[in-house]
Length: 456
Ligand code: SF4
Image (cartoon, rainbow, N blue to C red; front, side, top):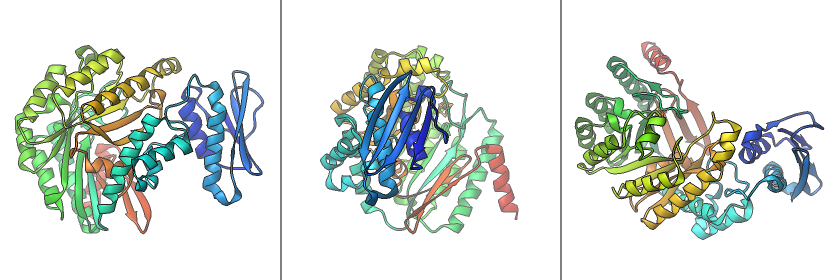
C-alpha cells in the first residue's frame, strides 16, 4: 500500500498509523502519487487535513480539523486521525486502540494523568478513539508513572544489564540473544560487564533506584558469576535501597544455588517465565523446558522471600484461547506476585496467518485482563509492539506493592536508565532532553570493544 502526502511531511505519522491498521498490506510512504493499486493521499487543506484511501478498488475519505496555531504536532495528529477515520470504512470493526499507534499508550496520557485515572482515560477516548477498557489500562499505568516521576530526584537513575544468552533459541524469538555459551564465554562476558560498569561509574554521578538484569536468560550465569556481577551493583551509591531484579527467564536453568546467591545479594524481584502451561505448546515453541520444569523452579523460588513475576505469551503456535486461559488460571493458582501477558509479535508470519490471528489474540488478552483484575492484579505498565496480532498490547499486572519500578521508569521514559552489556540501550535525561545510546549487539564484538576501551 502506497502512502502519499500533499502539503505536509508527516511521513512518520502516516506510516505508523497505516502499519498499525493494515500491517498485512505493508504500507510505505511514496513521494510520488499513484493512480493504481492500494494507496492513500493525505492533503493539508485550509483548516483541515483530508485523507482518501483506495483499497481493492473501493474508496473512502475523511478529514480532521487543524488550525495554523496547532503547529507541526497538530498537523501530524490531523494526518493520523484523518487516515484513521477513512480507514474505518475498510476495517471489520473499530480498533480497540483507536488511532493510537505508538509503542507507549500510557505515555500519550501522562499529562492528563495528573488529574487522575478518569481524566487520563477520558483523554484517550476523546482524542484517540481508544476503547474504554484499553483506555483504563493505559490510564492506570500512566497514573502510577506520574506518582513515581514526582518522587524522582535529579540524580536518580536505573541500570539495565543485558545478558543476551539462552540455553537454546525459542522458535518465536526476535531478540538478539545467542543460543548456548560455553562457561568461559559467560565468565569473560561478566568481566566485560564489570569493566563497563566501572567506566560508567567513573563518568556519571548518579544514585541508583533500580537495577534490572535481563536478557536472554540471566539464569545462564553461574552462582559465582551472578555474585561477581551483583556485588559490583551493590557498590553503586543508593544500591542498598534500590530495587534489584533478575529476570531468571527459562526455568530449566534455575537451581537452589543460584536462588541462594540472589537472595543473599539482596535481590528482591525475580522472573520465572513459563510463557505457556501446555507441554505441547512449549515443545512447538522450542522452549526446551516442560510445565513440570516451571513448577519445580517456581516452587523452589517460593522458598525465598522474592517477589516473583511470571511471563505468559497469548496464543503461541498450537495454543487456543481456552487453552491459554486455563493455563492462566493454573498459573494464578500459584499466586505469583506479578504476571506479564504478552501478545506474540508475528513478524515472520504470513499475511494470512496474521489475519487469522487478529481478533482471537485481542479477545484472549481482553479475557485475561478481566481474570487478572478479578484476582486482585492491577495493570502497571504496558507497551505495544509493531506486528503483534491485532495491534495487541503487552501488559504487566501486579498485586498491590509488587509493581516493578524499573519497568515503569523504562517504559514510560520518566527517568534515566543506563544500559550495559551487548545490545543494551541507555536513555539519559539531561537538561530536558533524552540522549539515547546503544551498545553493539554482538557479544563478541562488545567484549572486544570493552577490552579496547580499557587498554587505552
Ligand atoms: S528465552 Fe526469551 S530471549 Fe531466550 S530464546 Fe527464548 S524467547 Fe528468546
